[in-house]
Amino acid sequence: MTPHLNTSPESRKELASARKRALFSVFLNTCLAAGKGAAGVLSGSAALVGDALHSATDVLGSGAAYIGLWLAGRRHPSFPYGMYKAETLATVIISVVVILAAYEIGRFAVFGTPGIPDVALALPVALASLAVTVAFGLSQLRSGRRLGSPALIADARDYLADGLSTCVVVAGLVAAYFGLHVERFAAAGVSLFVFWSGGSLLLKALRELMDAGMDQETRLAVVRFVESHPQVRLVERCVGRSAGGRFIVDLDVVLRTGSHETADMVADRLEEELFQEFPRIAMVHIRTHHGHSRTLRRITPATGPEGETMDRLGDAPYFRIDAVDRETGKITDTRVLENPHAHAERKRGFFVGRWLLSLKPDEVYVGKIKESTAVLLLEEAGIKLLEKEP
Image (cartoon, rainbow, N blue to C red; front, side):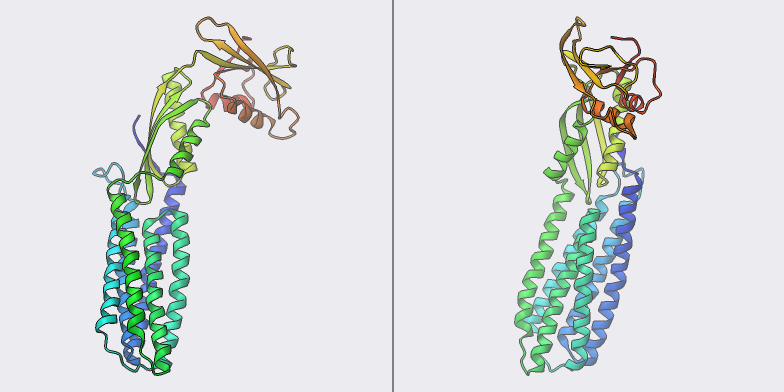
């Protein structure tokens, strides 16, 4: 089957939300850089001017995140698998910016010339910048994880790294108030941390560019979800690769049906349901295979454990489950289950239909009554409906 792109409203909504946050980040970093720069120059604080330069480089990083997220939602004939890796490229740029910021902080720690800044002017600006930076960084980190956006997560970590450098400025200004100059020693330690943070982001982005696999937890969740479908016997293979915080998934699925028409219908339905259940899946390709067992499972509504066959699924107090040999047509095993939803006052047909699907039948006797919700659910799932009593 042809691979399908995820164009669901949930996926588009996630990208739109991530783009808005990235654009606001550009504006906020510009304000922080301008405020700290002006206060640093007026107060004579070299540390605050250096921190302003750090925020200025963050403007470039936030801009890269926005451009990456904007491109991630585009469609172009030259990119049939989508442009989701544009977000990963943005993450590479942000990581390089973080590493450069680490170099600038370290250079100030080694070669900076200590002065006597105007603490009364510089300290309030540094404290306000610290509060805004940390608060927005934590908020951006939560949003990035919720939306599955590596660019937003990278941007958040950049904010938190910027907060550390601002902590150095605050510590230096407090020390300057008491006549001490210790900014360069603290700045050296922060420089190493920021360099480590940027290096970690760069390695992660390079892994995605080299088609790193989908994480094991998500892969197993996809397999469990697909195997819960009544027509699926098992998932033979599930392979996923990262694509800018999204996933491209290939599945080999063994179906219970031998009908090509039913197989196509099941595959299409599974793709739609996967996009709804896992919004981070950008594309899915399902190959269907037929794998009949020796017996088929036939379900018949009955009045009792050994009672007569009924024509209405929702009203049946019992269901007989027969294992039927496909070649001879003989019943090899029979068991009877009580209908757990027989006395439901509302949505009885819906609950009975869902319960019957969970039993993974091949055939269900429904008589000539096909108006009930239970019958419609079975029909939509591709279950063979019997009108004549088996």
